Length: 201
Image (spheres, rainbow, N blue to C red):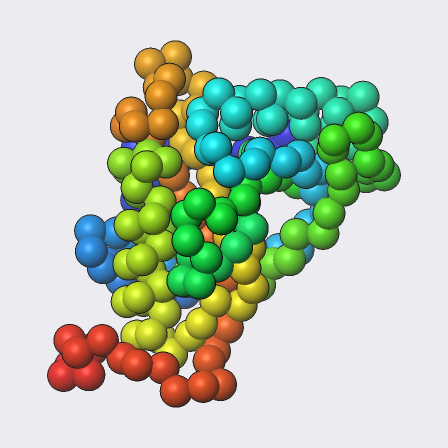
């Protein structure tokens, strides 16, 4: 299995698998990079709205077991995805799913489905403050980096990767976990308000 395992040195530089960053900036304490992700097929399992480490571990284990039974190749470490647009949908309406990119003849199995995960350009950022910091990170990237680059969210589907998930000391959502977030971006065809500091630069 190929892996995107990160060391502390890399936690502040979230990148798509195998793709170099094309630009980087720091906003609100987050390092934000443009990066590219490949389109992949994946085994997917629902997580619901109560996002916890226990739920992630259980879903990732279920997907890995399904991949092993189906003898498909796991091509990337497990991810989870937000199905929704944080700019439009309040947190109580956010819905999450676990995602395991694979190669081979994957098939649906019980609550596990098969999906196409679109690639393309993403803005990537990492928070060292765990799952509870996701809303703040979304607000900063969508409110600062996207307008500054005259971009908008390409689709309401945001990928994430949790680092140190297997660390026995990281047991609760509010502990110090690093979460890399990949927001699909597209150039905006509508006028985008540029933050004041960018306009003055």
